[in-house]
Figure (cartoon, rainbow, N blue to C red):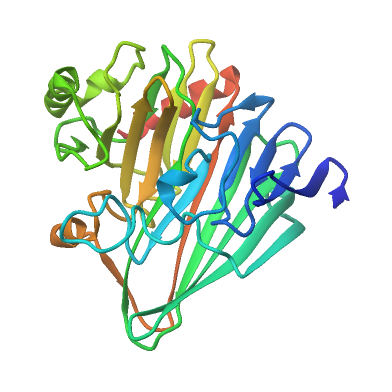
Length: 340
């Protein structure tokens, strides 16, 4: 499908997973229409921003860690995070590799200009417990170096359902990159995760680094190859928004350009940051906008972070993932400074 510079094509990976490639003249997304509607890879302005992983292609499984390497994974919706002994949900819930029953391509034009996109619907029904639909949409505007993402989830039951969501957006970290974001920085507002998940086997250097970040979270603001993000460090961040309701996050590269995320704290009040730098994978979850921290449903419910969606009601979130050229970064840094 083509409309000027806007193009969409479909193909199959050797693994059998179906994919859609979206192009707008300067950027390219490869998405998985029937497997979680993941953005498997993203190239903005000619630069591949996707995390480095052990997977060269997506694999047809619902097991989170057996096909993990995408740029964006929707996490939730009945639960999210790392399950503890008190939980019975899978890692990050059912959405990341959910089998979508419907998928569609869209062409259109709105106040942002002409766009091409991919949407779809997944229905999750468990007798006596859950019945909801998830309807994501990713739009790529002509000539843009960013993707606009939305997700609508409708509770199809007549009774309330508990829900959790996290947008797992995985950039590639850059040595010397500066992380700048619209949150006040203190141990109370930028909280390092102290609990150690079962899939993590830390050494003494990791534990010392973790304890240091608990007292001085700003020590992670400049990415250094020698910092012990192995296997991972996780923060929960209280973001603040601008006058239009948007929070902003940058990874400013040494050359002056930046990776950029904006999200709405009124929809996704917790900003999770996930950094993993190992010999086998290199990933910067610059901000994973979320309804809760990723400690598993039982722990987050105890914190008061698990929400309820009334029967027949719809919940929606919106965020933007992309990059900025060097001449665009200063204005965003100034806006962040004004917010905080």
